[in-house]
Image (cartoon, rainbow, N blue to C red; front, side):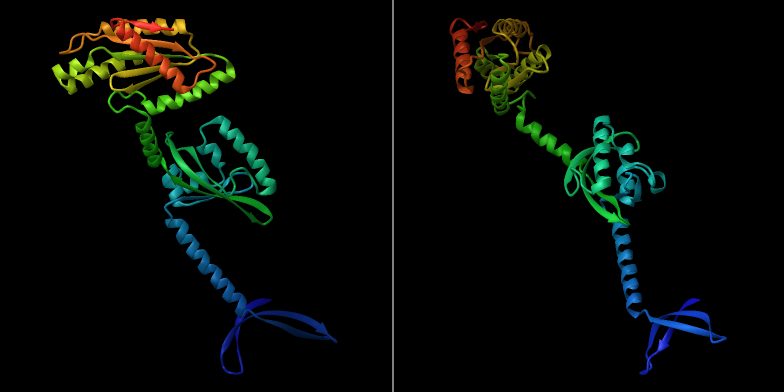
Length: 340
């Protein structure tokens, strides 16, 4: 028999004990032997542990971040209320289920996760253990959210478990995307700006040097545009810019980079495009622009310069050449295309 009670010290104070009472036979007699263990320290440790567990429970219960624990098979063993708010599943729905099967939409990412979890099961290590990463997660209702995941490993009863802390960063990602778009876009025409075009031109030069597939560049500007601003005002001039940009965007490919270079000048970067095809496109765009019947203004025309990348070209040299060709087109009467 084992029971707990209190013993009294000589000074009158009490202390907790665990008593092991056993009946034995000794020299033909039945005797009771009691082993008394002072459990003061053990009770203090247990009380401290209960308090810590209570604090931990409160923290996980009211934490704003989702806290999830997975066993060695990748199945959910812990799911706090914030996880339910973030991903839409109640605790009862997910305990024992495989987390990544619920929240990962991308099949390739899911397969990579399964391969990585095999290693984690054996070693407690993995490519994202101890790191913070960003990924897309699937809500119970089917839509995607951006989350920031911090993943840690803990060994319980000689088995590795993963603890993940997830934070919703959807709004932050939307804001970052908005800031990035604003940094590369011309606010008036909603096409790329000069800075982004220059970056893309540098990349295209490097890519062309690797694969040998030359690109072409078109630069054009609107003829006598100053007269439009002088006669009708800048607000009407802005409308003309927008209409021209819309007309060009409808004709070019998704792989082409269309940017406002400055003022009334525009540039088209055409990957893997010969000078002949680029010249044909420029003629087509010139015709489209000249046939636009704009409110108040009526008709406008544009002059074009077209060139193709040469092996010796740099960003500055090809831009200088296409600008010179545009200048020749304007010098020869405007509303025409000049190519080299």
